[in-house]
Length: 328
Image (cartoon, rainbow, N blue to C red; front, side, top):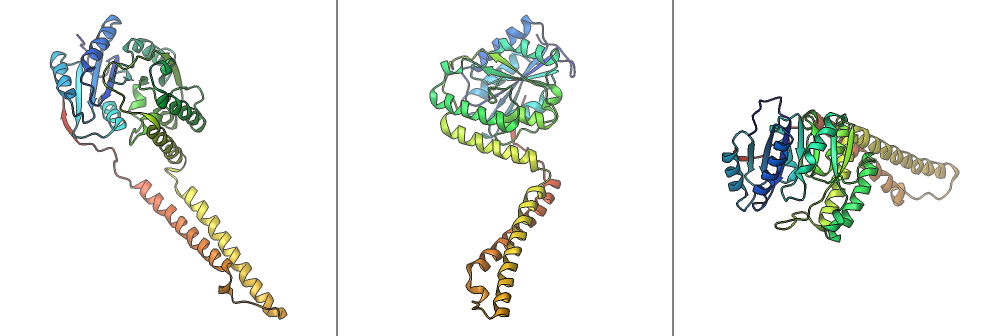
């Protein structure tokens, strides 16, 4: 029995799920056993991302049987893993917040050591590293994952992480309360944490379980391509999200200056030919005039886009608004 009050709870476990009815009871029993053996106060927050099976019925049953321990959030439709984590983070009150997938591939036995690394070793975030992943997953998943992680390390500068996308992570509570996980950015939570000033990021080798029920919801090259697009988006937002004029204004100014100089060259050449009596075609007969003019126009448009970006970045509405059908 978990008896605690807001503010002194040891661990919050946030579990995003989508169509995982077969595994939820077993997962909760496993989490409860580990927590009780280690005498930890805890809560388990299941976030149902619009499941079409009986997942929510299982969550409701678990909440009734374990009042004060199990909490549930159900979306009206499928939004994705990042919104599920965002809403789970908003509700979590534990000193350490642990995330794990609902498919039993993440082992709750890892939670005590992850918590110790956060509290005693001083990490803001500890990410799992599934060292034996290739034994349980197909090549269509493992090869893109390796390429993706190599690129993520290079772009983010977090060189010590081998598996950015591992669902098993532990966070100091302040971290989850000060990062914004949206879209498909759950893959880059360590990068988001680093950008928010939580730079003490560690890694722990964890056991990777074979999937027991159903099949993976994230497979193959589509996931790989989306991961790269999200990484580029995050890099741009982290570098220029609050100062779009620095990139659009610079490129726009450069293009305008180049176009203007080119127009001057065309005009001066025309005047020179007139002064010395050389043949002089009309300015509009040369393609360089139109290229120069187009470059100036594009430069002006980019410069204006920078101004608009500055206005938007300072007046953007809350983007994390999700329709929640029910909450336990």
